Image (cartoon, rainbow, N blue to C red; front, side, top):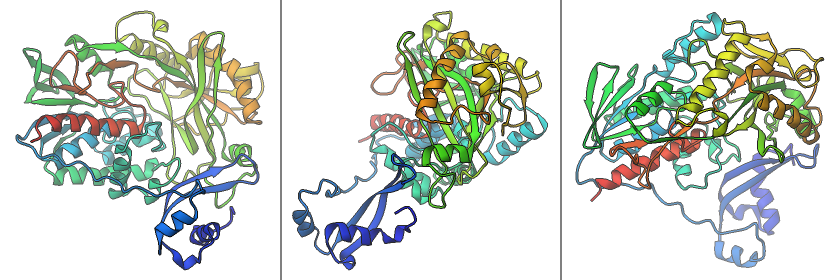
Length: 516
């Protein structure tokens, strides 16, 4: 029942198995989700690990019950025994870089970890100054700084991956202060407010393990000998020897992409998606999804929408949905605006938002070189800056006006401000055309999605990296030995979880080379 407390779960298990409740021992929730298919009769769905006074007899008596299975023991984290201590430079303190550095340091590697931005405490103040006073810092913002772009997001930890390393990532985050419920939520999240505290604890543990952490330190070059990386250039004025270099710079480090291109590091174009953010009142989305505006036992409602245009072959879909959150100006370059979504752990803000994006192909870029996608993104971000008045206000338009030419009103949480604008000027025509075709399809799936209260804000362009840094099966660059592209910026992840897992994967590849 929706109103029942989780403490009754042992009783419900006992009833299902026809057992006395005192025989249910050591129970714990391993997965928790919401079933709203028959709203307003919304159900909470649990998967529970438990032991009984006689497990073998219970399993035998319920052999036909497909919901009851024996849980295998989880494997312990791999520990490497090294014959030589590798010297590794990790570039970037997003999820990939942080988890790679942690894995390497725990196994005895000599790790230097650099980040072009600032520690999260200082970074938070810089972001607040940008939102409140429009003081933009190109090296300390929503994209750059400790924790990476995910620090100012919803802190989503769901992923399409089915990788045993995911459990390691979640347990590590809990160790550093994330809520324990992320271990069993169907769609776990930490929230931007909790993530900041987690990052501080993460940093302290890395320093305790001997990691040399350097903030405000940018990778400006790489030095090679006979095709192998031997050193890194930092801030244009320091040479740091490195036997192995993990490149986990994130998808907004465009100057890094340029430097790699000049060094002939093999890269290729990669498709991504661009579009707009849409905001609705929180209780409206709750009513659409749950059949009720709120309930103390229900979280802020989420949604996922997708439609494929068979004629064009393009997909249109929601992305990075932030229930009970806000839209944020996530700019990382002068004269260019990009927006994103953010939520705190409680997801209790008055509005919910999501990106609505259209698939972009490499043949849309207008050039064949690897950096063409970067130029494509930049063009439309600069258009959005102009449409917003050139003072960091984001361009916005009522959804009804965008779709029908009139109606609706602008209501937005976006910081520092939004300004009324024609969003057709901020995106390619094929993107706005596809959005107009998709929105009625989304309305059929979620009645009430198209409404007077819905506002569109532009532009969302950084759904994923616009290129891929090519690597082999050992995660090493195909053109530069000793260079290990990792995470979202390298084109091998999409979100906190997959980036963290990729960081662990790259670290394990390096450790395996030095293992006895």
